[in-house]
Image (cartoon, rainbow, N blue to C red; front, side, top):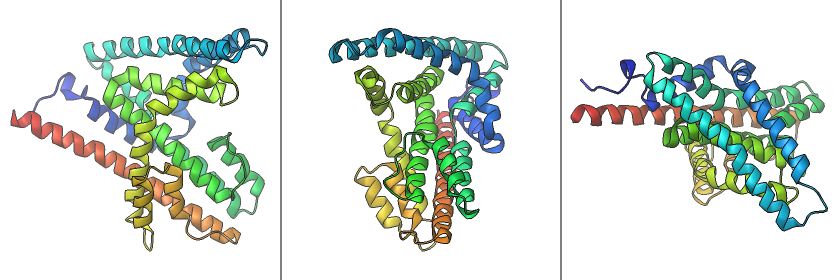
Length: 301
């Protein structure tokens, strides 16, 4: 029989990630994210205070950029240390690994973005563009409105699949809890500092680098999901994914033709939500397949 390290083999990262995604899919909502509200709030307050002190308009762009890089690396040290310490405890104390499950579930979010996008659809179906717009701002407050609301919702949902589901999952499997904490902190800092001004250039650059694999993985999963959509354009979605398009652009395929009515817009968002949910299932299935492969390899040895 194959054997894994830790109590009952539960310390294996593939098992933990699989259980955590199931836990988040079942509970979802704000309960899990509330677990990390304290650390997240301290990071936000520290980041804003340092920006207030160091990012001043009278300083040159180069000086502000250098200060931004220094501040970003300083703010990423606590998540690294916390991840290493937490992982040391969960890997060496019996049953402490159970404490890791809700933390992973709070940072690898699949159901959360789906719920917000569903609120956009519900707002449209109720004939209230204001409610739909408010929900969309929760999904991505940085979105500008040059395109239709369904297209903006698909772009935001695809982006959230990359940086809230695929990205954290990939970071956890590659680097454990330290990697998971760091990518979550990088995403938060990039949102806080934004694209305006040289001070936030460091956070944005690091975000683009660390989330690039997740962008490609998310686009591919969404494209594969489109192959199962009745009367879908799976070939078009695969082509978009393979040519480096963003996950949101791939997800637009599910919207169908340009919506000329509220009913068509709601139907398009329904299809996009269906594709997103299936892509989440494909991600879970990929993790399960990797686990089976690992068990077979361990058992063969």
